[in-house]
Amino acid sequence: MSRFGDVIRSLVSSAIGRSTTPSRQTPSPSPHAEGKTAASGMEEPGRFGDSATVEVDPAAIGRVRMTYVPSTDGDPDPGEIVWTWVPFEERDGRGKDRPVLIVAEEPGGTRLAVQLTSKPHDGSRDYIPVGSGPWDAQGRQSWANIDRVFRVLPAGMRREASAIDKSAFVRVAAALRDLYGWH
Image (cartoon, rainbow, N blue to C red):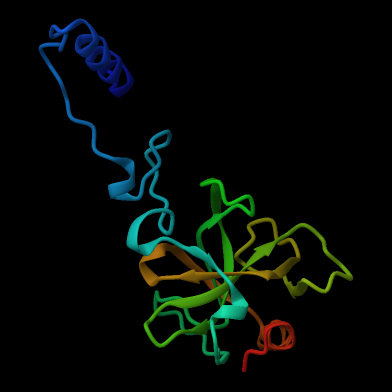
């Protein structure tokens, strides 16, 4: 029996004052508790709970020290591109799994990141070209969107994709420094 059917049956039984509970009920775990979507059953690290990837106000973060220190150790390090769930700009609970560039590590172990896009943004001050790499299966050029900054926890990433070229990281870091006053 579906969970929706169980809810309807419960509402009807409450309204008419008698039990219509089926003889066999299987409890359905909350998708939020396990970091899975209800529709697909697939894991989406970074979407729910304590490890959720969240957008932060870059101007309110305070001092940020950006260094290029990629290390393929399974943890998200500055200079690496990792995959995590990223909320849409509408901030309505929707989002999708996408690559982000880790730009800094905060003292508490969280990381700051900017999302990547393969949609061309030549000439835009908010999008910095980072080239192409193994994070994009089709080998497309990517741009870092410095207008949106996210806090990522190691438990909130799905996979470590690769490191970007140091010169690309330096360009992104310089743009973030200019825009937000970071170090």
